[in-house]
Length: 355
Image 1 (cartoon, rainbow, N blue to C red):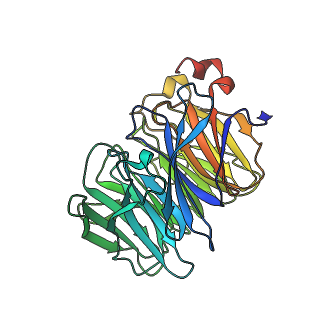
Image 2 (image 1 turned 45 degrees about the horizontal axis):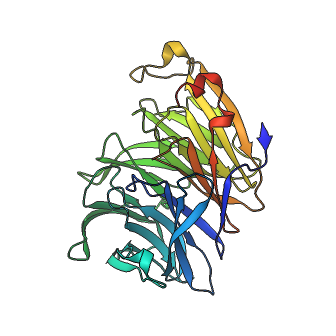
């Protein structure tokens, strides 16, 4: 099913790729997004959905150095976030804090809490501890994975441990397991690696090429969803990692991002360079839904494309569910257009009962 946008729009001044749900803001549905301009001064926008749910309001506009390639919101402090940014020649990563009186200032300045300055290779992403208050951060560059300890009061971050992916692999991204906080998954050009943060050693590898994005299912501790450049979307049971247990066709061009719903199992969003966002429903059949039963090649899955949001004029790189209202999501196309949509009108009766 395809259709134009019925969502709520917001325009950035420059091109952009990154958008993140502000999970720590439990009073508002909020998102952070950052721009990607090579020549102009870049910006971070704090956007909130109005109380009536009819418009997106800019609650804060902040200058940011250089192009923003990755942005992640702190899960326990709504004023803190991390970015990976580039001047065109080198990449850096930092943790920032929004000024406390940002709503009363015409040109508030972000406060740099800490620079993650141990990297020698191109930085790909920063990961926050999955939930709750904790001082640990992960940063990933093309060659290494770093575990940091952040002390915001002292405005410092210290490397606790690090490990190299080896000469044969270039890391491209990662995800922190919300069910086992000692495990982080990282992607390479040909495989997915799983790391034990207590030893900083690889514990498992899944061979699969060109994974662009991945996300753990927050409601099923054994499920991981991945998106690859040209081969669509795959759902993996981590207890049997030789092959995916279900496959979705993905997008007409590269599938760039994939996100599992934070509250409702089986609902998946994907975004691609075909200027579309797809809403999927994928679930084992009713007699095999137990999270403790191992999926296999004979397990029957219900898989369907519920809706394709196609009213975009450019590639869609940014994608984020709202943790506060998990039937809403925000998308960001490269031309700087943010759209917040509701999935409620497109759910089948079996899924609508969950909301």
